[in-house]
Length: 273
Image (cartoon, rainbow, N blue to C red; front, side, top):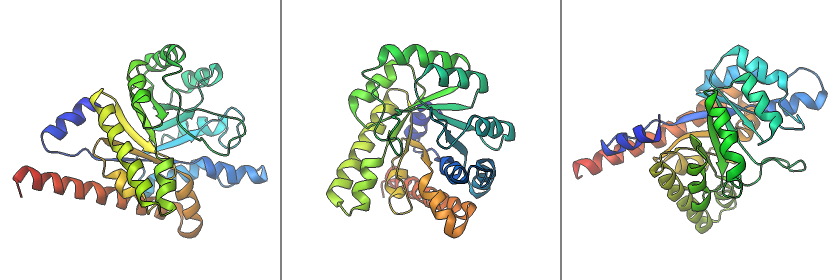
């Protein structure tokens, strides 16, 4: 759903549904620990879809530390769900995306020594680089999102470079919530909500992700402008105890419950109750 259609739904008192994207990177991390073939990220994607995932995310890093080129090719061939390919802003990754043509790409900052993606992309500082890069992806009918912090300057710049969507970095909120820092979590949640409203007003679709788990996801899923959450590490970890389809299904239920509550509150407000 485009941001304009989403705004229309809001004006009519209807809350857009929320999608769940499952990141299978860490299934590949476990496979690569032995240098063999098991567990298979494609099988994980199949189970995730069975559990209620709407799309699959895979980050093809420059160092290929988890997802490999063959994984991307097999995920595309399996056609289990739309593929969101996370990637750095490099000529190599652009060439791969244009050849493979995933449903969507998410442009992220990438540092060689980081354990996972930390912090959002500096869109405001890379307008001249990102504008033609994004244009080439969109010309190939590949949707583009930018992984950014919920900062007004970055959101405004995202609209200027011509992206379809942004993915708000939820890591700071999640860390505060996990640490029991109530004021910090409330402050960061307000930043996410403000950022989502700003992005939607600029015509951008709004996604969110990083660090989300069963305990902190509901407040984020309750932000009406956010129409997609991308979650990976927590659900893959939880799958070691309950299975991947079950962990995804539980997250799906929490998100849908948050959305149902939001629709109910909107209905009550429209009726003046």
